[in-house]
Length: 560
Image: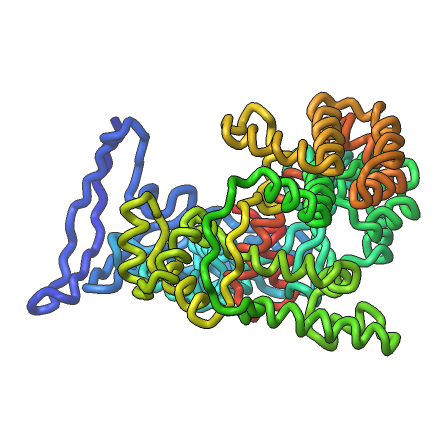
């Protein structure tokens, strides 16, 4: 156990009379660590000698003098032998017991005795405490850099204020420096896009798939920029990407020998979209089968004439469809229409290729989860309304006793539609295309028995949906068991007798067959890339769009 006594001048400016005293300070090593002086506690690893400590309510001032060996000239490397002068400099340190800590450091200025050196004098620096032109200690600088990495400017400034550290957002962000990008690209490279502003501007994220670390960030998503980066950073043997054609063109130009791997999640997403579109196109089959299997209808009731429901989303869908087709007739391009109507290009293409009836059906299904709860009770509500009971609250109480679990607002809207004549006739309940798609895409073992029975009814009602189900389950098995070599056979079958959306999906796979085959065969995927994209979204939203691309790139590349 190391014990040492030292005489230190302690000054308490908050005490009555402003007393100064010299006190014997005893250092005792209670943790089994050899401490030879108080300097080892306050400035571990630094060659300094403590002279005075002044304690206040909010500030602790420590005066120390550098006492290490002579240092070398930073230009020529010759060790200084003659002291030119000494002076005091103030260095901010990390807080001590909740109070600000300032260090007044007395350092020596040396002569440089080498005649050919352009520097005549130089100042010593204390290891672990001071740096040239830095008014904060190296330890505090590391703290502030960590705060800037994790929180950024404004949030970091608020935290520093609570920690009794004087640091503004500009100072915090100025401490951030982007790490050097490796000259060689990683062996397994992942690439994906992210939005600076959704639907407007995008960037490209490059990730080392083996380690999960971000390698670099590009300012756009063009094939030229990505190809130039690949030429400057050779070495990528496997490139994981989504279905974007721009990245595929860049890989073929810059690294033609690299193996492209299409991401499996995006493949399932594309397959799910094809299945859902098939279900949309064959809703009439499901409706016809349900009407045939429905029980006899109750006696007819005298309701007002049916009119078209005037919901905002249906009206907006009709207006957008009319605007898109009007501009298409005027020979406008999809990009020009998207810019003019402030829509995404994929949305414009959907309004161009999808019939209006399907768009309206999809709009009515949007947000209709609670509406489905009232469907079994509509015949009862219609009968009671015709009999003279027009109180929505009374009808709500009656159907609640019969098992209704929805809200009273839904009942009020239905009663209002009965008064206005906009209520749809009560028809047999059929599942929505999105629900059918979820049943098809999920593993069969995860479906409950009632859902399996309903899915079987759907397959019996429509042969095209049944064919889409068989192809989707087969593709899922190929992906799960990594049987990419059987993919050409699956594509041949889909192109022969599948519904139109499934044939289109199969043709899409054929055009990108090597990458899709690798995705269904190799272990690599873009999962780690997607995780980093989510991190980028968090950083971007925390910066509220105020920062430049340079600062965003630094925060993405810098990890605590």
